[in-house]
Structure formats: C-alpha cells, structure tokens
Length: 275
Image (spheres, one colour):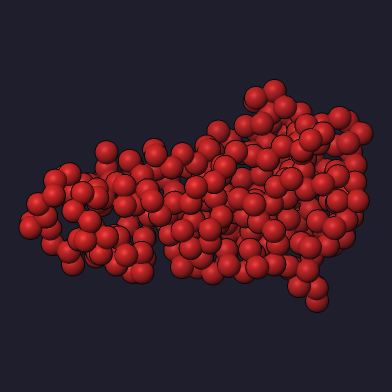
C-alpha cells in the first residue's frame, strides 16, 4: 500500500485544517521523494487551496516523448549505460525480449568485455529470446565489439541493435571516455538513436549521483528505472526525473523477461497516492 494513501482524501477539498504538514513532509520523504521536493510539494499544497496531492506530484514530472526513438532506416541503435549492479544487462535482455515479441528482429551486443558474467548472462538471455548475440573475448576493445555487432545487424537487416556497456573498467581509461569512444566508433556504421541510462530506483540519492555523472558525460536520451517492484515507497522515479530532467522511458518491475514496461506517468502517480 502507498505510504501517501492516507493523505489523498485530505486534498480533495479546500478546507485543510486537518492536515498535519510535518507528517505530510515526513511521509513524502519516507516515500523516497527527498526533503527538497517534499518541502516544495508541501508548500504548494498549503498555498494553493484547490491543488490536489495527485496533481502536485504529477506536475513535477517533465513533459516529454517517452517512446523509443526509431532510426530513419534500420537498424535503430540503442546504447545502454549504467553502473554495475543497476540491472543494466538484465534490462538489455528484457528490452530485446519485448521488441522481439512485437515482431522486430533484434541483435544484442555484449560490449562489457571486462566482466565475463555480463557476456554470459546476455548470451543466455539471447538464447532464451531467440535473438542474435554478438560478443568478444575477455579484455577485447569494447568499441570494436560494438562496431562488429552493429555491422552484423546491418548485414542481417535487423530492426534493432542493443549494446550493453561496461559499468566499471579495469583499465587506465576512464569509463566515460570509453562510452564516448564506443559511440564514435559505432556511428561510423550507423547513428545511435537512443542512449538509455539504467538506474537502480532503490538506491535513492546514489542513483541521482550516478545519473548526474553519466548525463554530464554522454548524451543520455532516456532513463530505465529498475527495482521498483515490491516497494511501498516508489517516489524515486519522481525525484530522479524531476532532478535530472530526462524522461523515464521504461521501468523494470521484476527479474523475469517480461518484467519491463513503458513508464506511464498517470498510472505511476495514481499508484503513488494509492488510488
């Protein structure tokens, strides 16, 4: 149950004498919304007598197109970035499964050549889904692997190619420099249409810090927010999008192949307030 559900009815009328404003702020913070936004929401509700909690929360989400950007001619190249442990490789598999189920042909690329488990995991996903997986040897140049994957997708006439990248490097080269190199090399073959940043929604301020680092270094076009399942909090999506100013396009809701869904602001806000 939403932590905020007990407040929802208090803001359906203009008389708000029964509202405990400190309790509201504390509950917003407990919902992973954070102190800054909690204070902002509380102040607005206090000052604007006709404003509901649902509308106040919804207005913090940005107005943006949340659909996947498609290339003018295939393949559509999607670069997936994020730190290790955020659910990045799993998100690549889930997105590939969803697109494949819709009838699209998909190639996934295991360009995280520094972590053998990532390549093995992605190959396992690809086998289960029935899509092509392109990988490289341990320590191979990630940009070269990504280029090979895009080249194979072009040769096959695939609709999509989704590139999994490293979340940490065991080399002298910086992670952000490596991601920039991957993009530059890949775009010699085909333009990158999307750069999706995967963030673990359960990590709060840490996710925000990660988001700021990646968005300052690479041209992130959308967010994938993972690990929102089984939580009564859920406000992480609100504060992450409001702070970073980048649209959440997908949410991960579990560990299964089908546990990914487009982010729907209205449904999210309704769930957050317990409606």
